[in-house]
Length: 197
Image (cartoon, rainbow, N blue to C red; front, side, top):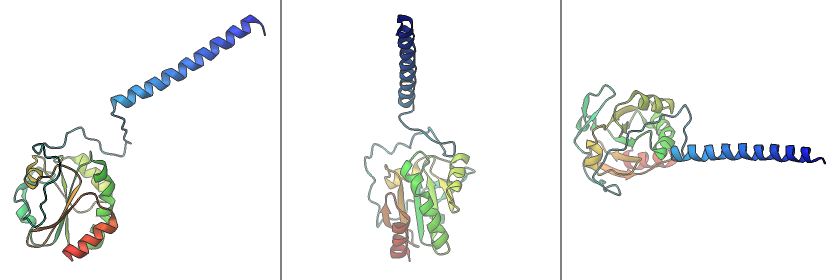
């Protein structure tokens, strides 16, 4: 092989390796800048941090205690006293679109509401505060039950909630009878039937 051909092959090979290396470095830097996460255009993304609840590392145990008597908000930002929700058995799911397990369990809550919604009240309580984006995201997952917001953190602070998601099963008298983390559809149905049925 002539020296010119060898040099051309080496040059093209070097350029190809450089191009691949540049692309790889670009992906690594982009991944670092996004924290290694990506979202599709159908997911809601929100950069607002979860509310500060005073450095609590785990959720306080609230089973057997009354539902915190505080104000939460509807999408319009109007205050809704939690005491106005008491009177029928209730499932309160505290969630936010920045919480991956919260997003994963929304379809299970939508299915449970379709099955039990006539005898059990369902409330999705978003810890991020009133947002059209949050509302659209939940509705896109099939959620048809009432969505309220704890934008000022009063509910989660009073209940001692620091890790999400949290689901509270509340009897008709307003007493929390069960507190859980992430749920699948079968477990959610089991708890509704055993605790609120």
